[in-house]
Length: 126
Image 1 (cartoon, one colour):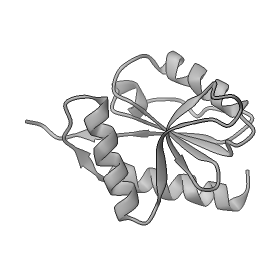
Image 2 (cartoon, one colour; image 1 turned 90 degrees about the horizontal axis):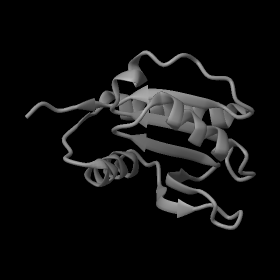
Image 3 (tube, rainbow, N blue to C red; image 1 turned 30 degrees about the horizontal axis):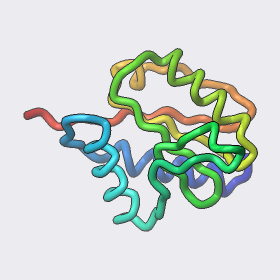
């Protein structure tokens, strides 16, 4: 992992974890996250297909090869399987798994061939 990739992962994780999100589904959470990222000067491509024949569709892709994958439901095991698949993509340099799931707060450190960081997203109470 390059120092730049590590810096970007930490900075984006810190930014997203400080926010409280109001959403009704994953699409509205994507809109909120994109506004936060771009408002902080982190331009991203939303729902971008990978260049390796389009096998993967990243929730967000940031310059420098950072994938941001958003989860509001599902298991940690399923999310990690998706991260493993993304790690095999040559344009991916690191992955930020941002989840509003309970497992995100207690997920163990993961060691893949590329850096993967997990951050818990906080949901605003109604």
